[in-house]
Image 1 (tube, rainbow, N blue to C red):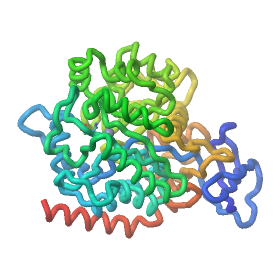
Image 2 (tube, rainbow, N blue to C red):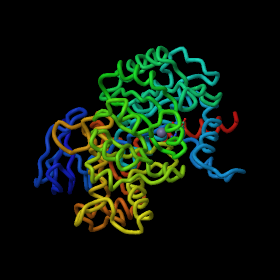
Image 3 (cartoon, protein in one colour):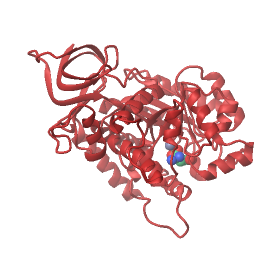
Image 4 (cartoon, rainbow, N blue to C red):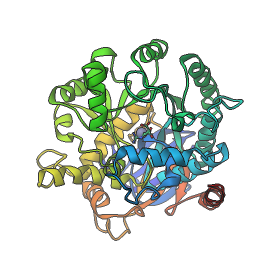
Amino acid sequence: MHHVFVNQALLESGWQRDVLIGIDGRTIASIETGIAPPAGAERFAGAAVPGVANVHSHAFQRAMAGLAERRGPDDDDFWTWREVMYRFLAQLTPDDVEAIAAMAYVEMLESGFTAIGEFHYLHNAPDGSRYADPAEMGARIVAAAETTGMGLALLPSFYAQGGCGGRPPTPGQRRFISNIDSFWTLLEASRRHVSQLDGAVLGLAPHSLRAVDAPELAALLERWTEGPVHIHAAEQTREVDECLAWSGARPVQWLLDNTDVNERWCLIHCTHMTDDESRRLAKSGAVAGLCPITEANLGDGFFEAQRHLDAGGRLAVGSDSNVRIALNEELRTLEYGQRLRERRRNRLGSEGESIGRHLFDVTRRGGARALGLRSGALATGQTADIVVLDLAHPALAARREDAILDSWTFAAGDDAVRNVIAGGRTVVRDGAHIRRGEISRRFSAAMHSLADRS
Ligand code: NGQ
Ligand code: ZN
C-alpha cells in the first residue's frame, strides 16, 4: 500500500481539500480528506481528478498524422483520406505497430487518458495472409500498453466486406479481412494475450455496417454475450445513404431495429442521426463514442450533443485517427463545434453549471462504461487512475474547484497535466512519461525506417 497526498481532489462527494489516497496494487483502497500529509506519503502539488478513458483509437494512424493535409485534384473528403491511410498502412510491420502504439499511449497518458479502447483491425500480413500467431498485431498492442502502463481494452475488429450489401473488399483492405471462423480463432488468441496484462479487457468490434453484413453481425453477437461491443456508425452522410440503399434504414436505426443495442455497446461517431434515432440511442443505455478532433479533421459533421444529453444519453471521447492527442482539446473541440454551429456560448451544460466540469463528468463516466472498466471516479474500490493538474501552470494559477476544469479545458495546452497514475503505477512525473526517452527513440527509428522503405 502506498499513499498519495494532493491539495485538492475531485471525489464523488465533490471537490475536497488535503486529500490522502491509499493505493493497494491497482486499486484505490482508502480516501481521507482534510488531513495533514503523513510522513511517507508521496506529495503531488496540484489538483487530482479521475483519469479518463479514451474509447476509440487506431494507434497506427498516429504515424501518419499530418501526412494527409495536402489538397488533391478532387474535393477531398473522408473517402480520399481513407485511400491515403490505406496506402500508409500497407507498409507497417508488427515492430512498427508496437513502436507507434507505445508512442501514442505515452502521449495519451501525458494528456490525462489512463485507458485506451484500441479498435484494432490491422490483423494481417501485407499480402492478406494471417501471421503465424493470428493475434500477432494484437499482441503488439498489449505489449505497448504494458510498456507504457496504459489501461487497455483491446477491441479486435471484424472486417469482411468493402461496403454495405456485400461489396467485395478492395486490395487496400486485405490486411483487415476475416471470415467468422478465422475471426473467432483470432479473438481467442487475442484473449490469451489480453489475459497476460493485469486489468485488461477484451471487447468485440464489428467494424461498421459497411464492413460487416447482417448474418455475420448476428453470428458474432450470438457468440459474444459478455464484454463491450464497439462499432462505427453514421460518421459520414455517404455511409448513411449507402445503408439506406442497402437496407431501407439508417445505420443507427438499423442497429437499434436489428440488434440488442444496450449498455455494453459503444457506437462510434453517430454524427448523422434523426431525432428519433437520437432519442432511442439515448434510451438504449449505449455510449456514443465521439472523436471531436478527428471528426473535425475528416470533415464528418456535428454530433447533436445537446439533444443526446437532454435525452439522458451517455457519451465518451476517443482520439480515433490520433492526428492530435490531447484530452482537454477533445473536450474543447466538442464544445466549440456546438458553439460555432449555433453561434452561441456555453452549450453543453445546464444553467449555472461549469462546462468544463460537465464535459469532464460525462466523459469519465461514459468512458469507463464503454470499456467495461471500474474507473473514472476517485473512490475506494476503483482502479487507481489519477491525473494531477498543475496549479502552478499559468492557465490554472489561483483557480479552484470547477474553475480548474474550465481553465484546463479552454485555456491550457497539453502541458498542465503534471502527474498521472494509471492502474496504481505512477507513469507520468513532472509532465513526462517515465519511459518517454526510450519509447520516442524507438518510434523515431521506426518512422525513419518506414520513410526509407516507402
Ligand atoms: C478506420 N476511420 O477504421 O480507421 C476508419 C476508416 C474504414 C474512420 N472511420 C476505415 N474515421 O472505414 O474502412
Ligand atoms: Zn475509428
